[in-house]
Length: 264
Ligand code: NAD
Image (cartoon, rainbow, N blue to C red; front, side, top):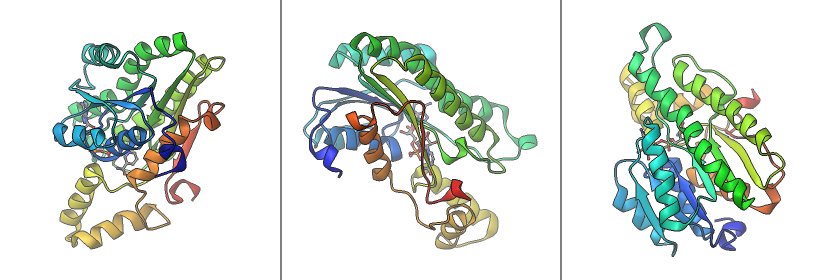
């Protein structure tokens, strides 16, 4: 845990992290909780386990089940956060899904779902939350993009389009709020070993008749020069940094944490 997180620098703040029942979102929520922020969690799956993990840090936590494909449910989630904790000071747009297929074979419903969850949901959370943050003249929005916001990979058309899109959205939101205490930035991770990537490893193992270890090594070796996964906690610590005063003049940045992937 970073020194910033241990200082409880975010005590009294409320953070809402979309897609925080698993993977990177849960790690970010946990880092923000260690730094003292109360948490509104969102997402499906093991909700009780996620709530327990956050509450173990000593902060308050609640869950809202909004589906990120549904704008009216997203609005209800922000209202729930306001009613429960009084504000959304920190918004992390993290919910995301993946589907791998070439463009000509890409299922239309998967394209629509990826654009809705990985891109449009951030527009819907921000359009409701930003005016409230400006009203308090303090706010932090962190959009979890990807190295795929900066470079492409065959088979990932919808994901790459959504992640390039969210970097554009981040820049515009940062410019629209540049003279306020509200900052909007993006984090661009390389491969992190979460359920989203585990599925890609299993698909690769099946396709190329590889052992799980060999498939993991191939996935990393093809793209990530360090040959190591980025850890979800490293991304959580970066999110805590973006909430600190040290980051108050970072506006519209895209921060790579990708083992060298985008340096190639
Ligand atoms: P994950 O599958 O572990 O978690 C995804 C989360 O989103 C879960 O909590 C899930 O319940 C939630 N979710 C899915 N659909 C939802 C919906 N319709 N409404 C609300 N919540 C929904 O995935 P992850 O790897 O932790 O990915 C999190 C984010 O990080 C995504 O935006 C992903 O694109 C990004 N990312 C991941 C990696 C990686 O290597 N894992 C790399 C770069 C960026």
